[in-house]
Image (cartoon, rainbow, N blue to C red):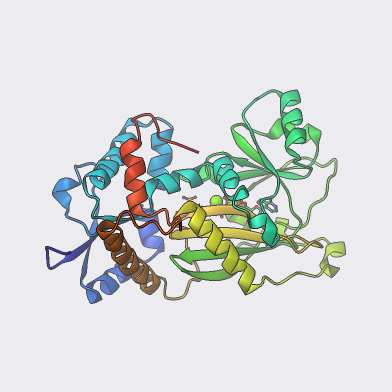
Length: 357
Ligand SMILES: Nc1ncnc2c1ncn2[C@@H]1O[C@H](COP(=O)(O)OP(=O)(O)OP(=O)(O)O)[C@@H](O)[C@H]1O
Ligand SMILES: O=P(O)(O)O[C@H]1[C@H](OP(=O)(O)O)[C@@H](OP(=O)(O)O)[C@@H](O)[C@@H](O)[C@@H]1OP(=O)(O)O
Ligand SMILES: [Mg+2]
């Protein structure tokens, strides 16, 4: 299929992300596999920067800005979308439509909630979106959705700014006044302060254990304001993670590999994405697996040989994409959310449809 001898990976990542991932190392892997790595300049037409074999990106911050109406960000995303539309031969990791779903917490929870995982003892803790500033109305909304105290209040926008990670623990009705809509309220699940992050790279995944919030119970205490990055990074040492003496006796349940595999398979199929992090807690007592967060292109801190896995994914995506181009009608019924689906959606998209839940 290639009409050029060099295969080109067009990529876009923020400077912060490039440094964190030690991206120059990926350059060596690319060369070894005959790929050139070219950073996209989103301020110019992409046509003159290509041709690309594959586009790899973390555009969450820019998509979030575009949704909020920033004209520069909208122009950048349009350039990417136009290029994708005009070049069905280019594979995209990951489809913009799928990434958009993860930008809105309510949307991503709803999407997974309907995936049938409940049958496998996996659940999304009860959640609801709060859009009003009216206290009484919010109490009613919470009650009707079955969101119980304590609950975690999370900004609706899940990615793309430090504000997205400023969360609140609400313990009682008075605390509901501390919610700042638009936000998502989600019942808190006691899990002995252990968070499991499942990092996906295509069909591969790797589990890391992280600190998390300690067990909390309904009480008359005041709201706790916290930043998720102070609690659940590998090196976090927040006092909010230290179990109360009574809770130290509770047994912590270890995750089962087969269950994690099941979660990965369903979430990947549902969202059609290859680079994701799924955050899971195991509920004390019931042993149910609660999915509390899904992140697009997460940090992959602790993932062994991440760049080799990323290269394997790129090779696989190019291969699969070429097969899809040759036999587009061959729909096996398996919703891969691949880039040809993306293109169909993109071409149907209108200027104002920045976000579709
Ligand atoms: N429903 C819940 N039940 C129990 N703990 C929760 C729940 N939701 C969030 N937490 C706690 O709060 C932390 C941050 O929550 P969450 O992952 O939703 O925030 P985030 O800002 O999206 O984080 P990330 O940095 O992973 O994107 C979790 O690591 C966990 O400790
Ligand atoms: O690296 P980035 O800047 O993309 O930050 C991401 C962060 O990675 P880091 O750990 O390297 O900071 C991720 O952490 P892990 O789940 O992997 O622990 C997670 O918090 C994402 O939600 C962040 O993306 P954002 O929401 O801010 O877009
Ligand atoms: Mg998140």
